[in-house]
Length: 146
Image (cartoon, rainbow, N blue to C red; front, top):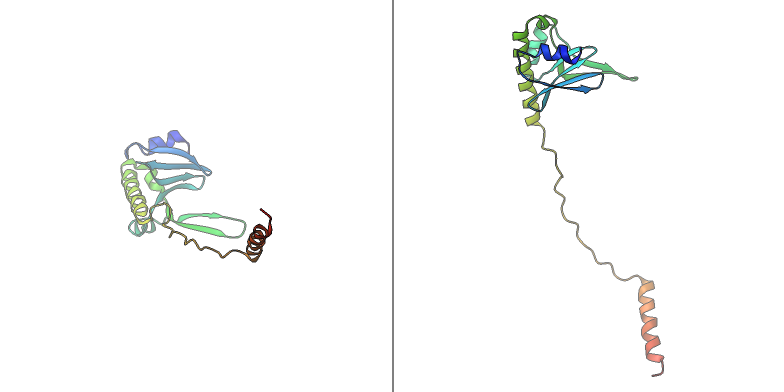
């Protein structure tokens, strides 16, 4: 899938931003990423509200393999193939995917610095060496002739 094809595909949905990502493209609207176009297919953002629709269509979640294991990404599901020929229904699915991405964004904690309690300053008593030097200085001043 190339940019031009994706732009045409989402024409009924509305304006989208298509950015190079991984081995394909990330697709976003209003600054929120809601779809991935990869070699393996087109994947829409999903959550507990939208996953049943994907399951009913026989779709599967996005997955990729590492050297050690296969990773299942349950937050992105493959778009049913029949929707490539029905731009109006694809736009409805895209709106649902954008809504799922917005719900996920609300669930996340805002990124920022954690509140850290101020550290208590503890005064250390002078070390024995320092105390001994001070004592020598005092003694030295007292024994010096004027």
